[in-house]
Image (tube, rainbow, N blue to C red; front, side, top):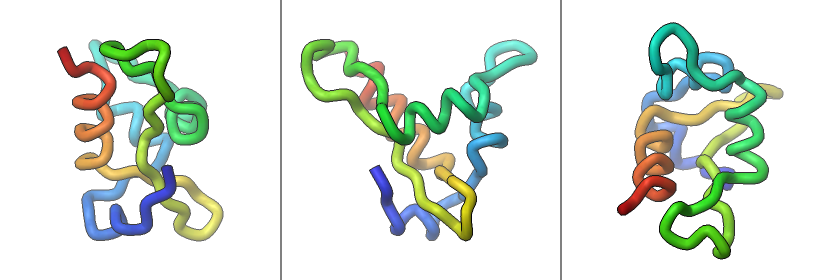
Length: 80
């Protein structure tokens, strides 16, 4: 979901955002983050429900998310 309010948070580009979920030497690619921006990911508690999208904004022609938005998204997708 587009969220212009994340401009006040710690912004990272889609390319840099993969480092937020890095395990070992690699994290998700920029394409994966863009997919999470646009299509979302399943909610583990309600897999039949709507997908949860990662908050993002555009600055110029580039997509950005924030560290805080990424943590909120992880909480929503992995809640137990």
